[in-house]
Length: 510
Image (cartoon, rainbow, N blue to C red; front, side):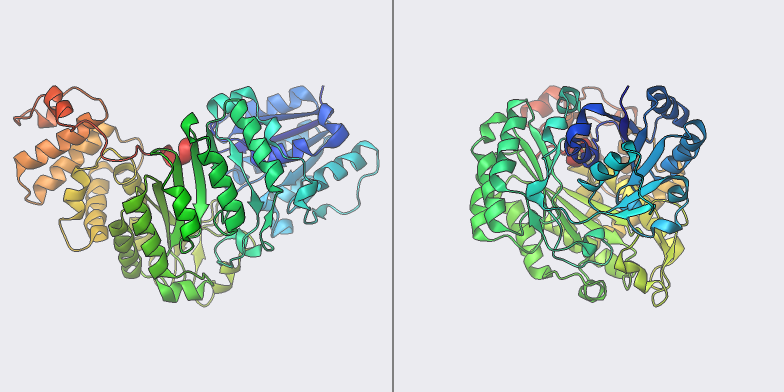
């Protein structure tokens, strides 16, 4: 039996724990007595408990994140009872700040804060040698990235075949956006580029074709980003898919020249706009040239085949519903393939907490610690935005309503206002945000467009074209009263083909 067990509860099966693989790769002589077992937050906790207990490890290391902290709290409580002699060790961003204030940390033997690549090995060596540290909270030092064993060999064949493969060429962030944990990072550090690219080649040789880079600012260091793009461009004919997170207002010509050469479906950029309101940006210490960011988005949309995923955050200090709507409208008109609308979350340790009193920030008492209201946006307004965000994901981000959704968004001066009214109507009809069948989504949009007074025959044709675009051949019941072309006719005219790159499934696995 393994003496050390590394585990966590991922958000879903397709995810992999990148951090635990770093710990595993850097255990040195303890690697051979260590096992990594991953679960999901949807697994029954009794089953998770039983799997851990069956292995009877001497040390259990658990990764704690904003999405699993509630479940981990219950898990460690039962582990403490069933395996009282086992050392329980926590790590991860959720327990790296406000450490002593959390219920989950009170039930374990040790908490490692920060980057634990080496610190976890050092702790395990002492515990197994019978020399446990006196302090319960261990602050990991900042490791020299050249001293870290890269974790990519720890991806199994099953991982490569079925799950997201995360990679990183750098750590840290130079920016100080107060809502983000990266605001607390030291300046960006880079892994040795030759060693990193050699590891990427090894992954390709093992069959990896999809790479999700977790670097916070991939395009910060141009020498590194150019080298990585050129490496993958030289192998673009192998059907690769690459996800990068980009700084919105940094896209020099040297990067553009490489980006335009990638084939369709090869690149996805996550671009964190977050807010187009300059006053809000200044308030939260976010340095962003909005005009340049908009120009870069427009250039990418018009000149490349990159799949563009852009982020906006609702509930930031100083942001009203009206100013958020203005930002959404501006972003929608720039044409990204996806707009992810998220509510502000209270990440432990982030500087955003300094606004709690001055802007009356009221947070949920439960993970994921979302904002409930501020002095600029009411609880009721944020509830409407929450419904907007979910329905937008179903309609705006799914790729299923390429022709019919614009009929709604262009029915008034503000796309945000148009969709907000629609989302309120859908909520009144359905009283739920999840588990709505796709055919019902088409029917709801069809009914609403008719309510707006749009020409019924034209609406029916557009909705039907969207419906069959995904390969469906039937005629939905709600459209049977209308004379519509045969599916084969639509296929011949291109009506069943995607008008752009297919949706990347929220980063191919999320």
